[in-house]
Figure 1 (tube, helix red, strand yellow):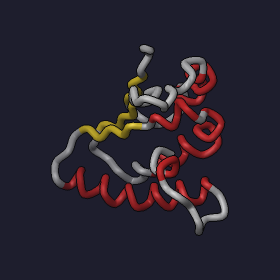
Figure 2 (figure 1 turned 120 degrees about the horizontal axis):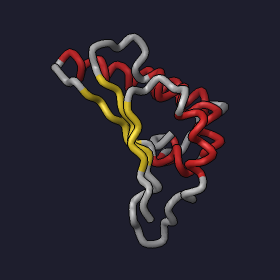
Figure 3 (figure 1 turned 45 degrees about the vertical axis):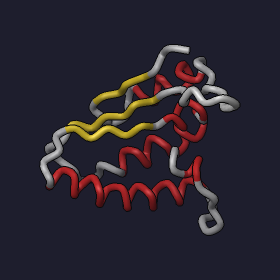
Figure 4 (figure 1 turned 90 degrees about the vertical axis):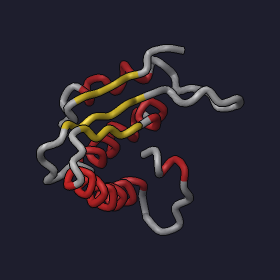
Length: 117
């Protein structure tokens, strides 16, 4: 979702399809990292906190797809409210309440959540 939030899509009919193709490409990189000896792989997902509906609709599924068939590695995701950049508002902290039930059931080993302002 964070990649999608940063690019212009003129090809895919919907963000979900784009997310799943990006996940397939990322999975190849994850596999290479595991083969190189990485034991923990963490993704940064600020868009999860910014767009809870998209996260619930396809974001978690796409993140999990990044690790499909990958074994022997601890998987992690960091969900933040966004970098402190002038003119760029952080995500609403109340969005965590909206995404918490989905986070409780997904297949990532570790979740790191930014809770500060």
